[in-house]
Length: 168
Image (cartoon, rainbow, N blue to C red; front, side, top):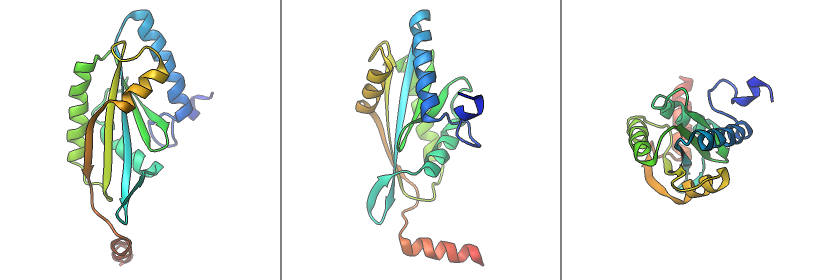
């Protein structure tokens, strides 16, 4: 895999395949060095005409850009599934990871998204909750910590009005 294909174009977001590879590698390193590793998952949905739908890649990239300011450069941020961003906090136990999650929520609270969003966050820690990548992901999804709602409530009529205002 070429180095440039590890990241989504123009971002520091790992592609799904690269994220899986690096997560597996970092788990092996954590086992060898007997360190903690915490996986945080953010599942984003957006509101459209009163229904919640899985967030598109553009929305996920916007969320990633917002939360990226609160994570270390050594932590891993990437796609792990459709509508899901994953963050690996290296050398971080669960207790300290909750502090990072609090900062992420604070950052998200202070950002005005252009559409109404729902972001659910969960987390799991190696070795506390799981010892392999698949069970760690499963535990992170099933261990919700935060359910956040915010952003502008939009309707198709409001979108047309906004588009018309931008043209002028």
